[in-house]
Length: 167
Image (cartoon, rainbow, N blue to C red; front, side, top):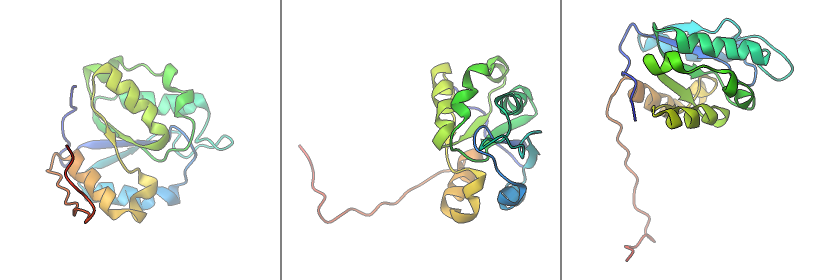
């Protein structure tokens, strides 16, 4: 698997909405958080678009994600939220620019279709919290920060009294 480069202060991170619509108010905290990490936040042109439950039409969502994939100055792309809709655009995306210039693709839920596609291409991605959840899940947000900047992640899980060694 090919790992994209870890981020450093001053790098650009793109925010797109490949699925359900999102508002500027819902992303304000996340944008402030990413900026506090020393990242330059680049918003998809259609990020706040709306078509039914989606963040714009399939074409708008495809265009935003494609621009982020193709822009070599963008070092990571995070989806604003999941829901449903990414499956509708996956076959319209061209990953050739991404393959020449890999970057971290981040999200969960509906974004898993992107993770599967990237894995089939031989690239790592990050299944992690999304901007819509930054305010309500500080632990997951900090784990994402550490992952993006290549810091060690350690977990301590206490043993349960009923655990026993297997054969």
